[in-house]
Length: 132
Image 1 (tube, rainbow, N blue to C red):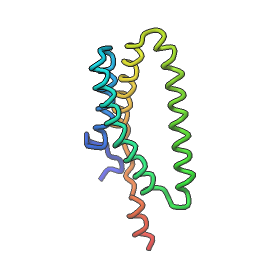
Image 2 (image 1 turned 180 degrees about the vertical axis):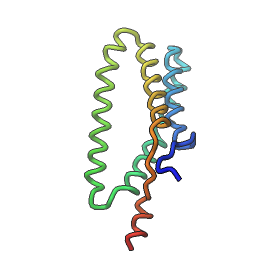
Image 3 (image 1 turned 180 degrees about the horizontal axis):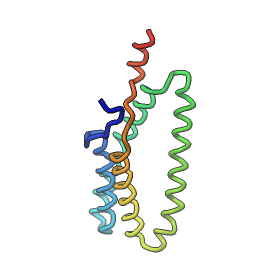
Image 4 (image 1 turned 30 degrees about the vertical axis):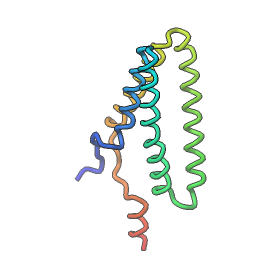
């Protein structure tokens, strides 16, 4: 059996696709469509954040959890700052273009997720059982 697997489309990737679709809707510029898009963005973010915390808690060794959660938060804030730095000039050029750029980045992130093989790793529960 191969050491690497490529993830299939499943419920863990759906929120990313919902968010990409919401960003694409934002390019319309119509107020009613923007409200629907914002609701979709929130609906996509909620499950992602909950899943992120659950996986971090499950997979991180207990003595490193604080450091891992702090490092993750720092990387997320850095990502937001980089996104804001790119979005500022893009929005000045074209607001719908900046939102379309956000949609493209979201789609590319989902594609990278499917393109990069994931190493099979035992969960922390499996590691704990094998150590006892």
